[in-house]
Image (tube, rainbow, N blue to C red; front, side):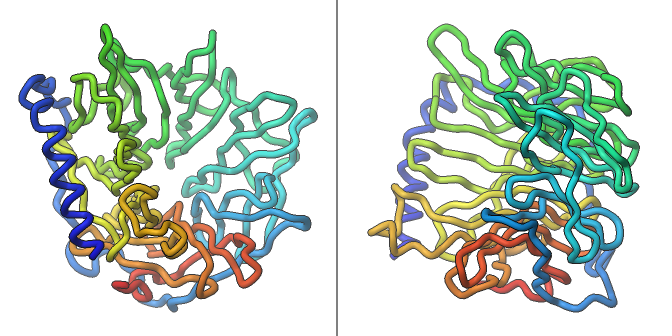
Length: 382
């Protein structure tokens, strides 16, 4: 039944958007490298790992925990009980909080163990970097959030000035460049940087009474403004929102298309030269889903499968809990095992070694920080 519902939704959406496509042609695509070849079967895949769902320790107290980034060896980063933490193996460690801050998260970590994230407290937020063993964090100038860090130590995130969001790139503890949106756009997010220095984010544009959303791409080592990623609708369609979340070393970008009119989210990718956007589908009979991360070199993407409150199933309480999903770059999306039969799960990070980091609810419905090892070997079609 849900297959017919999804097909009907596609027909309705296509009928709604077709006149808009013909009425307003999209601008030229940004200049970028050609689409990279996908890795050969087995390239970069681990040969000696064991498929498992590893549960990491949590800080004392109430609340959930989640892995947001994966570092070298057994290093992982994220949040536990609302506090920024990192893990070595399954052991949890607090990130020291400066005076005036009461919480936060570590959003990412690079191959050298440099962690970045955001702190909050007393109505303010701050971007920071941190290394294991340091006595304190380094606050990043003008920063509200740090979203990602590459292996060269370049950090990206945002700050706020005069009520407007500013895109920032830091090198060490100094601002390396300010990330300008395209003319006519305001910045919505800066989310990822790869080792080449290419950056992804999102923005919104308003012209007269028309508004639209687009993914954004910044070239490496350039002060030029970002360019919009195709596909988007610059014709007064307020229902489509594009959220690039991660970018790999070859420039592949993954994220989510949110069609708010039908409350459907769809995993999305953009390949160089970014002339088109493509959606690899949904998990089984689910009616919505996201991509949150892509592995650095092996083209493996992860995110979360869920359902739309408008598309179904009906009644909404019959929908299964959210579930972590993985996509090897071709073929259908696959599900990752749950920690408990009825427990929700989400995936936020993936490495070339097929580790996937995220969160999964245990038998008490408490979200636990987890890592799926050899994730593709335990993934399945629901």
